Length: 223
Image 1 (spheres, rainbow, N blue to C red):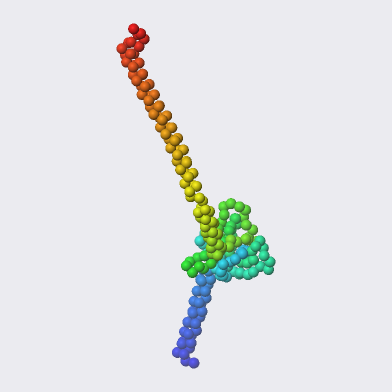
Image 2 (cartoon, rainbow, N blue to C red; image 1 turned 90 degrees about the vertical axis):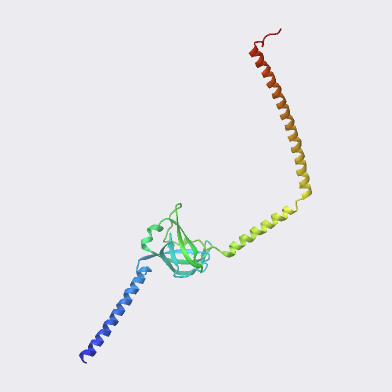
């Protein structure tokens, strides 16, 4: 093997090693960014329905990615109406923030409707025990919402039917009688006001005469 061939093989080996190191560094950087090399702890959350949540979905706390969904499975036995178990991997550095009362809710993100878990910290209430299963908040069920709107529409329709059954003639007669009573009352008030106005004018005239006699000095003069 001559010197030139040895140099080519050495260069090829060197490029190969550099390529492997570059791939390893890139994988390490990606893993660090995704939290693959960070220490984690697990939280188990129970749901009635996960609404399409998948493994690997992000877990957010105040908009910050603090972990991901590690595993989704059915419970062998229902617990408080919940039948789906979701195991979360949470970064250990965020454990302190979760040592309060918190809600684990399934939310929808983006126009494609991707599911994620959002943690909402509550100011009131006892701190949750992260070592035990936590009851989660199910995603909004569009079918349930449609049923609510349907019931509301049915109630509105029944109210409209009840209103249509009211006797319009009877209602108009009642309103007419009420109008007459109000008219009579208003006439009586007008008469009282007219009487008060007349008495006011007479009282003013009397006061004017008394004032004039007082000025003339004839207030107590009889003859």
